[in-house]
Length: 321
Ligand code: F6P
Ligand code: MN
Image 1 (tube, helix red, strand yellow):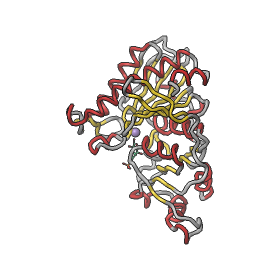
Image 2: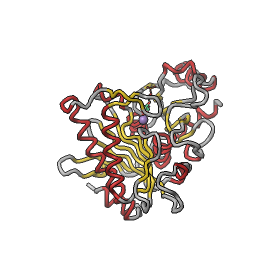
Image 3: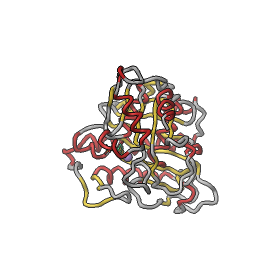
C-alpha cells in the first residue's frame, strides 16, 4: 500500500508542507494513543474550565491541544496557530512559513461514551509582514488554504487529507506507525437518501430549512418521492467521514436563538477544512448563503451555518431558500 509521503509527493506538495503535515500527524498519533488509553489513564471527564466559546473543556481537549501546540511551536515551520481551545492566536516561530488552525478534539463530548472523535486542521501560508501573534493573518477565506484534513479516532485511526489535488483517505497502521493510502481520490456520491441533523433544534431553524426537512421526513409519500434515513454522530468529524464514504447531507443550520452566532460550527477550524475536503471529493459546502470557503472571516472563532455533502442534495436544499 502507498505511503502518505509518496502520495503527497505525487500530488506535488512542497517538501516543507510535507514535513509540516508529518509533524501534525505525529501529534495526532500521540492523541490517538492518549484517547485509546481512556479510563486507564484517567483522561476521561471534564476540567473545571470553559474555552472561549463557553464550552466546558474535557480533559482530552486540553491534552490534545497541548500536544499539537507543543509539537507545532517546536517544529519551526509554523508562524502561529489558532485553536478552538485557545482564546487568542499563539505565536510560534517568527520565521515560520505557515499558519495552522485546528480543533484538537472535535466531538469531545463523545470521549466519555467511547464514541467517534477526531482532530481537524487547516493550513495556509503565513504572510511575511505578519507578527506571530497577529490574528489578522488568519482572517483569510478558506480558498487560501494549502491543505486541510482530519484524523478520526475510531475503530481504526484514519486520516482524510487534501492539498488541493483530490481528497485521499489513509489508515494508520499501528504496527509501524505509518499512514497508508486506503482510498485514493474519494468521491462523494452525487445523490443520497441520508441526512444528518440534530433534530432537537429543528423548531429554531429558518422556515425554508424546516420545510426542506419536512419534505425529507415525508418520504415516499411526500414531494421527494423517496424515503430518507437519518444519522447523527454528534461529532462533525464522524458525520463528515460518513458523508465522504457513502454520501449524505450534513447540516448545522442557522438557529434563531442566538442571532449573533449564526450556527454552531466554527469557520476556521471546522467548516472550512471540511468544506475543502468535501469539495475536493466532488461534494458541496455552503452556508445557505454562499460557498463556505468564500466567507471572509472577521474573527478567529467565528461561527457559520453549514450545509455539506452530496452535490445533488445540497443543491436541492438550496432551492428551498
Ligand atoms: O464541535 C462542535 C460539535 O461537537 C460538532 O463536532 C458536532 O457536529 C456538533 O458540535 C454536535 O452538536 P450537538 O451537541 O448539537 O449534537
Ligand atoms: Mn469541534
